[in-house]
Image 1 (cartoon, rainbow, N blue to C red):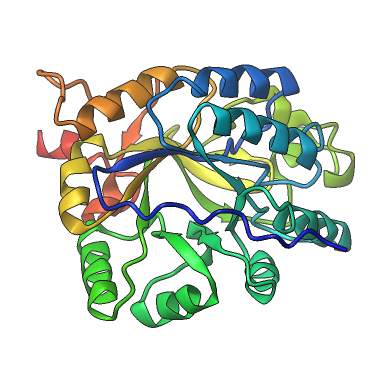
Image 2 (cartoon, rainbow, N blue to C red; image 1 turned 90 degrees about the horizontal axis):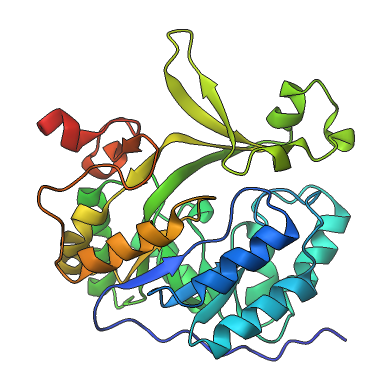
Amino acid sequence: MPNTTPPPSPTLSTGPLQLSLGPVLFYWTRQRYADFYREAADWPVEIITLGETVCSRRRDMKLDDWLGIGRELTQAGKQVVLASQTLIESEADLRDLRKLCDNGDFIVEANDQSALQRLSSAGLPFIAGAALNLYNPATLGVMARAGMKRWQAPVEMSQQDLAKLIHDCHQAGIPHPCEVFAYGHLPLAWSSRCFTARRHQTPKDRCKFVCQKYPEGLVLRSQESRDVFTLNGIQTLSSACQDLRHELTVMVDMGVSVARLSPRAEGMAMVVKAFDKARHGRLPTPDPLTLVDAEICDGYWYGRPGMDNTRTMIG
């Protein structure tokens, strides 16, 4: 019998903006995961999301491994969330999803309709991931009645549209916390094809896990030699990293409760530290635009093409 004991519901954020660490989107080694989360236990983030959200062939980390890390992080005072896979492609994927949803310890972030159906039918609380594409109060009302405890805004939603959506939700009696993707390569699309394997001229089912060679993905350039996308197995992300740390005060005024930081292979401690300072109103002067060695984008937030760096354009 599956363990359907409801995990504790997350505390609704009514105070200062919380920081969350999203799941690692890239394929790392077991040792790298262990080292990363050992360090993250001491970082000033309130929420840490664990799990493989991209590709079921990445089998180095089993559910028990994630649960073990989750328990250690819980002891360090973190709220732990387990994220589901975004693209379900087989019965084996569904079996793994059922085990994840029935884990009995931690609330689950639902990233596709399969997870949503499993969790809601079992009466389990859940986090609604950005890949569910929640754009209006009517849909969020349905999610709330199904057991949603927090929701993530679609990464391409502008500040103006999100502010209106949060306002409309409160007017409709849906005060559930909203989480915004505030830092990292933006997850844009998923495909049944593995572009990293194709780059190495190997079939997807015999990929030899080549994506593990790229702990921050594989850059795709345009014919004009401009970095456009980051290839991460079956996932396509932005080439540049979104950086909204200058917008944290605006987010609080809008009613956003959580700012999500997506893990990177290097320099993540510095990113977390910068966002922690920013949420307490301590931005350096003059303010460097780049936290680590990466191009920065924020276009979607301002209703522009996502790859735009609006602060540079204004400057």
